[in-house]
Image (tube, rainbow, N blue to C red; front, top):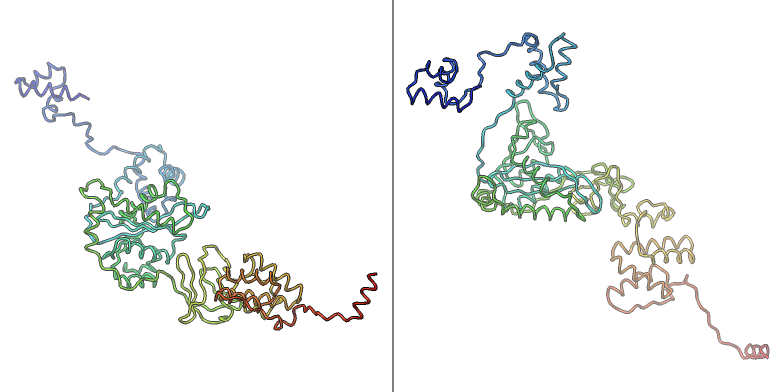
Length: 498
């Protein structure tokens, strides 16, 4: 191929010096037809094929390849045909006798033509996109997978990220609540993919049937929803980019936190620092553009939103309530009754009517039992024989003086001593552990080992008054009998001493 320098010399000789094409061909030793091409183009145009290359061995099989590639569109990405696999099928199933290279070239060219193209979009203020991502973090000394909620404002590129133990409806709602409060308002519309937390079902005409939880969230905050096409994450490319950005920047190196609360405080601080960044193509910082977003937002509702899932269930005969595969205890007084469970991200709250009857830390294990020992003490007082086998008391850590008190009570009273000990434990239903523990220590020191004595000492401690313990009201305590020594006994003692 002739170089650009030769093109310039030939064109100058003809157009400036006035040489004819034939004379220029003789001077530079090239064909006159080449001179004509050089005069038509200022730089070498490159080789241009007049018609598509002939593929006599492949052409009869092109329709089969096209059909395979079309069928692949509905298959998982990791189970679609490679060029090599298409070649093997053509060879083994259809008698193709050509080479693999021409097959690879055709498949590559076909896929290039099928790649999706996109229209640049403008993003008006006041709208948001939402998605979940996954990462690793060390929480309380344990490395675990976290699911982080990401909210992006496409106009300003403002972001909000929060981490949760699971991608649950409670986390979905809590993420919205925190995001709205962080930005100081509610976006006019939010774009989602078709996640099951929001969309129960896509109807035949493309309409979405919303989940109850999502409908309640939307009714409270009044934002409009928008959904991308199924399987097209690029429809919400802004938040998809934020998920990757947050993982690479906010969570590298792997974050270490004592709790999710601490980790989320760190993530919010990262989002605040990012407000000072100025991104490519913008003259203003993210924070400066966020002002326009906030001006277009809807106001926050006057009443707070409860980011929880609500379920009505029945208490079992074991005084347990099942929620998301785990069992949580309530007081035995509510056995067999209908209760309402509110599942938050980190707590499970159980109510009967308008009364809250139990509050537990949320468990994300499977088939776990979460007990509060206090819920079973009233029943154990009646069924004292189950005391040593009661599962709710396993792992209940109490100060050492409680074990000492039980040992002394059982040594003095036998089986009734167990019931007396459970009555002492029931003081923990009303009073603080520190106050009851101090009363038990004082009772042991005074030698007044009974429920009544411990209760009296607890009340005296709380009311800041001296204890008044009358031993006459404890007839079962050991009594000391003191008599007057008679003169004859005294003389007898003296005689024995002599």
